[in-house]
Image 1 (cartoon, one colour):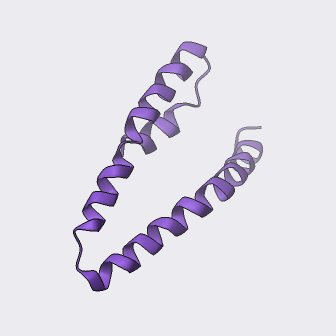
Image 2 (tube, helix red, strand yellow):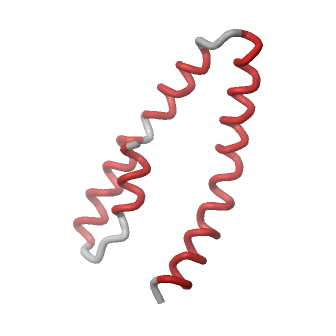
Length: 78
């Protein structure tokens, strides 16, 4: 949640604000380890499915995110 909110707030006009939101974004990245710890406590039948979905998002997000963000920026903010 912290990561998502700080990601949306880092569209800032001042360099200092951008720096602060990037630091918050890094602090919010600790949520990833919590999610994996929770998934590790699932039943064996559901654990594989949960880690597969998590891995799918982890692989696709870096490729789709910048493309979608660029499109949103050029379409709605230009």
